[in-house]
Image 1 (cartoon, helix red, strand yellow):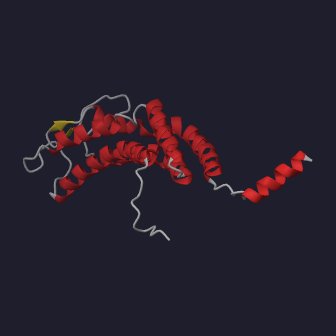
Image 2: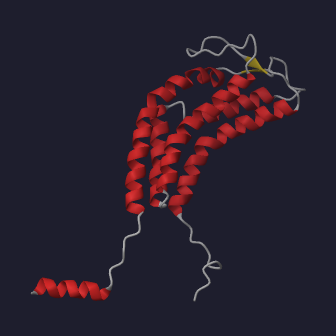
Image 3: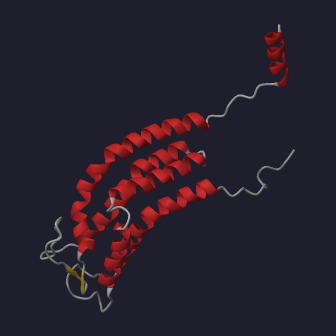
Length: 197
């Protein structure tokens, strides 16, 4: 009898692709939150002045710009999320991949939006049309903050489609991931004899 526990696991490229695509959606948002947490730990209240001489505003603006790169384009976001779901189906993870299609596109927009909301202060303008400026910790935040105002509309635009796709792909993947019963050789031979008669 083989020792299954000691067998090395095979590399699954579909699972690796599934994880990589979902990481591309979420990791930049987490980077923005790490910077926000550093500012909070340092006791830096949101405002135009530098955070104890650190240019955290510059780093946060760049992190947000990367975080919005895919999610701000809804067609690209849905395409990337569906690609991750298909990779998850090939990795035989139908429910996980369907759940990620529902959650990850929304999370990739909501996480940076909440980071922006938490860093706003009186006099910091965040506008859907991009009008106005917001200086945070010595840096003009520009569209990295203004994009947060567009998030509710962006979610409203794509969520019905991703919900329908998640249901369809999840059921399809679950159906094909089910193990098929193995037919015995004797049963197959008996069936062939019956067909010959």
